[in-house]
Image 1 (spheres, rainbow over the protein chains, first blue to last red):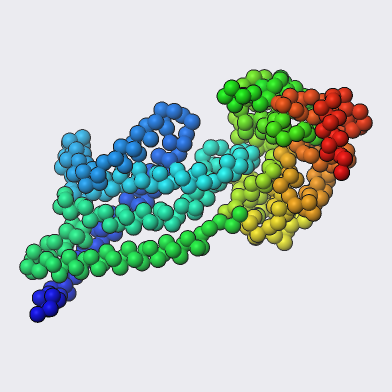
Image 2: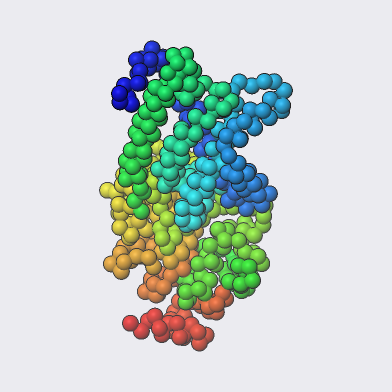
Length: 223
Length: 242
């Protein structure tokens, strides 16, 4: 009897609507943490590069702290600590979204910092020379170029983020992995479910990596 | 128009400018020359406050650059600057390069800015390139666009920081022609350059710098006739011998 004959994939089809709900949360978490993380990360990067020393130090401290703690620990820690500050219990989903945005901001900030530094100093001078303020120079001259230079790396980080979202099963948030776990228990067929969601993760990541390759060849700025 | 009053600048311990003083009156064209590392580019970047300085002051159009209360962006909007490496915004079209400052800094309408941009592109002979990106243009063309970008802000004076030294020789003249045109129209200009032909033709005065100091500040004829300082004589004999 071969290995695969013991599998019963007929349990997948009836679980699809349930798994789809999980995937929707995984996608929502990824998209919010990506956009929020890039936004906050850019502010952190600007703070780190700023000449205002306390601001630069605070940003550096935050980024280094976040990057030195395992993500799973941050997820658990935020889940337990935030309700103490806010005084009311918070759902696992909301907690996951806040945690991932705050955590990813640290990683995205390092990417944006490299991106900002990849823009030649003369570009800043050029913006300032036509009378642009700091924020105008950043928003019209530096950040668009930094963002474009870093687009492939930002997407690569997003792929990692997408995979990491599976860690929210630890606080019981219903993402794709958690949905698979529940469905698996329901039908007494956990293995089939895990094989199936692994396939879903793989297909999404594979498609995104191909997008990255495509973008790398297209977005390079002609100088 | 521009009064540079005893300015000094240090990078840490290293002194890059030492007690530089000069004046440029309205309509005057002044060429600044000197060996590399003599502080010419640093000096011209101090004039619109792109580089800070630690001592002395520069007064542009009656506004102090050194005063921390001065709104530098507002001042720079009316002081045109052209850079050695053009520094066009590579992610914008040529037209966008010329309109962004007008719209975002001067508050002109898109339509008005666009009209002005096309008018200036016409002036520098590049209206057929309006929708291209800087990377698609030659160095000489890019530098002419950079001059047009500065002119689009209707500057009261223009600063040129080695505008031709990054260009291939056959492209230098197309840029110098535009600059000569500006000078003949009475634009106040401070030009860091080694183009002695240009200096002879349009400069009212030539400033020679060495080691962070202004060594010679003389009328053009006097400068090319008999420079007083030995250092300037040596410099001239080296660059004019070919």
